[in-house]
Length: 232
Image 1 (tube, rainbow, N blue to C red):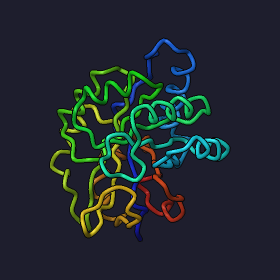
Image 2 (cartoon, rainbow, N blue to C red):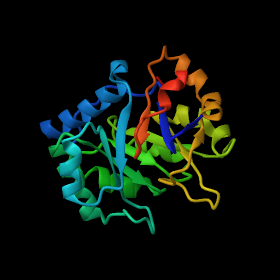
Image 3 (cartoon, rainbow, N blue to C red):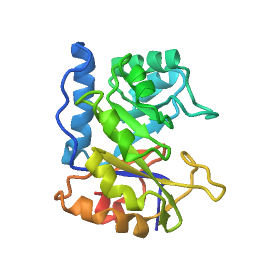
Image 4 (cartoon, one colour):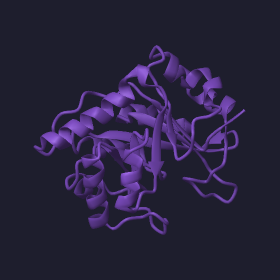
């Protein structure tokens, strides 16, 4: 069977968040998001990516949505936001009990620091081909930061497979498997992943944590995923 185009597993690096910006509300939302990912009883997570309008947050806040992806530093991306717009939507998401995720191709930790220091966000999704060194730099920004690192899969080949251990040591909290299209596009391609191949990359990490790793579904419904024992 095939899986949806984006799935993820949690690593062992997630820790309880501390207050970052002095705002009790910001700390509360960050903590709630971390707990949702860590609580093994919560099952499948739903993340809707590419939000560009406050009205979309209004709709999603009334649904069973855990995370909203806000693009910043995705050149040419249809949902890429200017920093001011990203800040505004991230703040509004927190006010509506939605955990915003900074989705980015940026490789400069100082650019990411500027964004993270300006909004109640503790999740960063590195959707490009960023290095373990960047992960370490991002984790130094704040002990609260959670890093989701995308692993790019085309057929039965994962570009970053040799680096998975290095990413874990650098502090990645969640790996997200993304299906690369035939023409090289990444992210929201709508293409399927082969569940057998993804499971071959994931089981040692999932089973070693007594099934504590959870699924994160990006942009699509979770139907059909329950058949994969490594992602329950």
